[in-house]
Amino acid sequence: DNTGLVLCDIPGLGDGEVSGLTLHDILSVIKGHVPEGHKFSPDQPVVSETDGYVKSPGLKEKVHCVAFVVDASRITSYSKGLGSTFKQLR
Image (cartoon, rainbow, N blue to C red; front, side, top):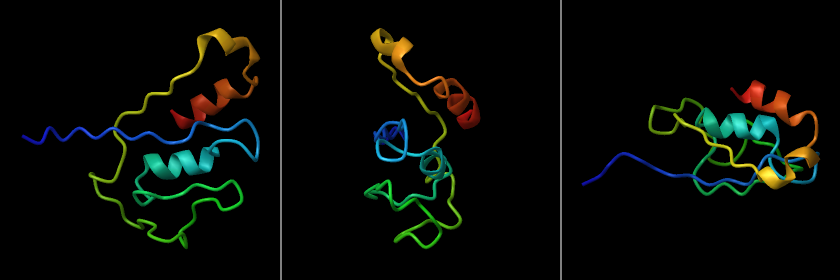
């Protein structure tokens, strides 16, 4: 039987312009605008003109629960802005 549970793994939140996802791209994923299989690129943010962009996502496209995993052994080395980024995502 189908449980309705889908796990989605995306690149992590970046610490700058060239690594990981931007806050904008993560919010686009959560809101359901990013098409399945999309290849993220730091020089091409997700916009309404992105191939396959979902303009009016339904409940099935939206993310309803998010878990961020961080390496606790490196917590002191993360940028100071990471906490405020998590607050913005919340």
